[in-house]
Image (cartoon, rainbow, N blue to C red; front, side):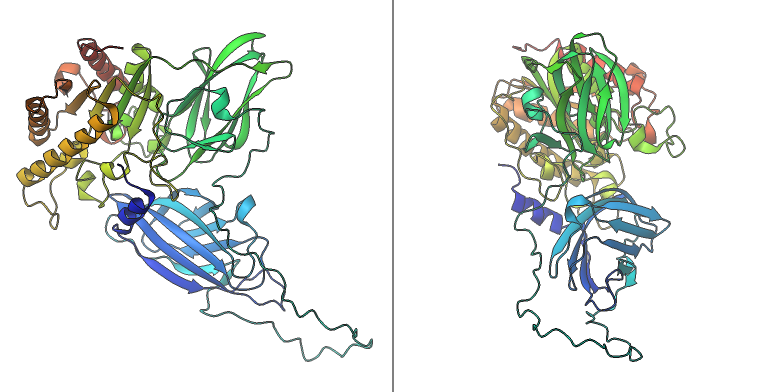
Amino acid sequence: MGPTRSRLRLAVSLCAATTVVATALVGTVPAQAAAGCRVTYTVTSQWPGGFGANVDVTNLGDPLTGWRLTWTFTAGQVISQWWNGTATQSAGRVTVGNVDWNGNLGTGASTQFGFGASWNNAANPVPVDFALNGVPCTGRTTGPTAPPTTTPPPTTAPPTTPPPTTPPPTTPPPTTPPPTTPPPTTPPPATGALDQTTTVGRVRAVGGSAQYTWPGIYFEGRFRGTGVGIVLNDSQNDYLVQVDGATVATLVTPGRTTYWVRDLANREHTVRLVKRTESPWAVGEFGGLVPAAGGAILAKPAPRSRQIEFIGDSWTAGYGNMSTTRDCSGNGGVTRNSNADVTFGALTAQSLNADYQLTAWSGLGIVRNYNGGGTDNFRTYYETDLQALWNSTVWQKPATWKPQLVVVGLGINDFSTALNPGERWATIDQLAADFRTAYLAFLDKLRSRYGPDTFIVLTYPDLSPTTALASSVQQIVQTRASRGDTRIRSLYYDDNALGLDKLGCDWHPSRRDDQLIAGALTRFVNTLPLTW
């Protein structure tokens, strides 16, 4: 069994978490209205260079039809992605506004939004100066303001009808979580996204749409006509749109839209939508395909008989692989330079005509994350459908997903940085022992999940001067083989022999490197006695 939702929440609570409760006046209500709110700010998870947080807002005053929460970061924190709200930041000042479906807050009603951000790896204090709709927090709720004493009494007698004794209606907090995204502005297609397209990715059906977070998710469909519309709702990720095998568009954080491909020959076509980027804290949503006038969406293509799962970290996810310089601060940053569709995993699968998953998360290891950060590791999230999203749960693996090959590339983050004071391992040997134990248990889970016939290949790169990862992987394979597991192998990516340049962001594999690694991996896979 993987982590249940309650287990995920427990895991999150073990991370560095800080909560602040405050009250704020509401500045956009009439002078005679009662106003106030409560804000709870919680850091849910933290790792080297980044953290995630949730913010709960409760309206204690009169009903609101729109809200805007502001605060100030004091230690250089910078928001990079968000959900259930619209966020802007100028220096340390942050403004988060409501989205369409959560703008109404009755008396006592609450709403929640979240975000991912960077921090300075030294201090991550609670923000200050919380304010709702422009009025600073006061720690109390204010009642109606008394009328001015200079106003003369009315000349007309007041109505004899007494005021109603029933209090005005309030909007209670929803009993179920609201949808993470509003519906697309274009009318949805007649059938759902998963009825129209083929995918093997970890997706969650929500109405007629599909939600997802893992990198490299792709959807493949067919249509007849001169064009096709692609219904999307995603302000965090980048996508590729491919028609008849050729890339026709790169969509950068498209938001809520229907993207149209037009002026095609009037015949049958294939279309493929690919998520290029990582978003463990933010969901993407694909709403399906819309035919151009006079066209039609055709039956979705059959899935491929070959299936491969690639499990790993930033190498597998395609972290900064499109960059030609290791410092990406001046050429768009890591996200704009990442493309999961040209990673070694995607290229290997495409060369073998296989469907695939990229189950990858940058910075996480088997027992130790990059530079020793955080308490959750890759194993915490491996079986989740929406990674670290607030409503993530265990992915219900369909019976149709049974890969004949699983390629695991974990361990770089465990061993690539020196141990820090205060970590639970005093020596690399102690870390390596824990790593081997946890890795063997993870392989037991994979065997239970996929059965004895699936080939598992453990890969590892050059981490000179340490050999702890290489020796650990080799020992793990030997241990498994001694227990009768005959379908497990290891593969070493030799930097010098392959000629890797590591020109991706922060010394990661470049697009050229991904092609070289894919070539080596494909050649190795072709030597295995696989039954495709």
